[in-house]
Length: 370
Image (cartoon, rainbow, N blue to C red; front, side, top):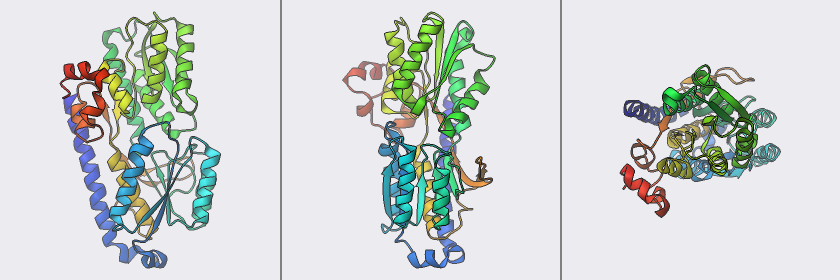
């Protein structure tokens, strides 16, 4: 675990360094690559930032401020970010794209509520001469750049962790799979990676695609699974993220489980980390947000100035509508009680005080979190 974590940490550092160096390189090439409008505008650019929802803590706590800070740094404080949150409403997000186009932003960063539904808005932006960077989720339509985590690898990491938790008892009962929303292309990749690890090694009793990723929907699905399978038969739960894991664990407790089965997660949300400390949730997937935010900001600023992004985005990803999208994919880390200190605390995502509230103090002390 420690070796894997160190490798991932080195990879993250390397990615962040590469992204940072790439920004320097692209800035140096501005004279060669900039369009007339980009050259004239200089640092006084406006970037539209559209995030999908505010149910998941990461978007407004981490992504928004990190992107805003990076854009400010890249534009010597002259760049402006115009922000809107779609609150899980794809129609609202399309209207927000229209507003950004009307306001003539110089580039758009879009984390799509619905990757297919956003395609028309992306095309309208492009037709208006506004480049679009897909952030975290691979939007359809003629996007110019994309940054996310290696989402299939997320599923592999979750599946491996669940197998590790089950050990020799992996086939002694059934597991429940709680996948994300079908409107999110990342959910399909998480599912694919997890199935690659779990198929043939466990018995999958029930599997759900969870509408809108909502914890209450995961809770209802889990209640249905307990009713259908019986509490004595469920030995583990694959949960695609931490929010749903919270709803699942509430259902398990209400279902009368004497000992909670291992439950996976993702996003290293504070509540998820606290459940890991308390022994209620087995793991989460820690995704270092800073390199992802930096890549989105660097691509958007370069594109707004009319610069190329080849030196920033060295990988290529295909969407259902666009082939060879220049991309930056950031590695992920399996977060368990064994490496909380070396991940979210070391990286400054949370302080020990934030995690170890009075309710969790004894468990924190037992893990050496002080």
